[in-house]
Amino acid sequence: MLRSSLAVLVAAFACCPARADSLPPPVAAAVRDVKASCGGAPATIGKGFLRRQDVTGDGLPDYVISYAGVSCPTGGHMKCGSGGCLTQVFASTPGGYVEALNQNVQKIAFRTRNGKPAVVLDLNGSECGRFGYQVCKSVRYWNGTGFVAQN
Figure 1 (tube, rainbow, N blue to C red):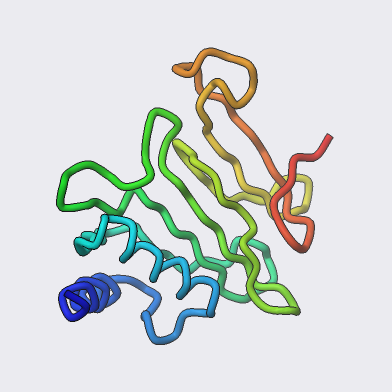
Figure 2 (tube, rainbow, N blue to C red):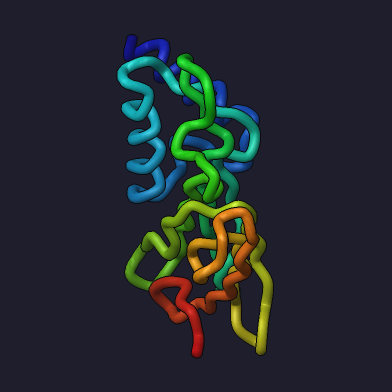
């Protein structure tokens, strides 16, 4: 069982820009959690599960995990629903990597807004007082430890 789970992860990272053996500890821990999320059966990790990208503007790699790229043998995508799929962003800081975002999103895009690194999220309408089917846009700015809304 452990060998089959390990084989799935090795195969997944062979196609991805970030190699499993070079991931920062919090990112590696999040990837390990995926293995346990299908009730003991190995998760299938597809394209887009893990990507390395500078999202904070410091020139260092950050990591984005999208659970839209994960499915369990019982069917369906893991940690996805009408609010989108769980997306985690791990950002580099002088003290190491921090989890800068951990939320279900329908769409995510990284931009520079007002001269600051920002993330633009499409969320379920219930996140901003609308009906669930109505998309809710949210812009959050990098503050050095996470992406936060700016008033």
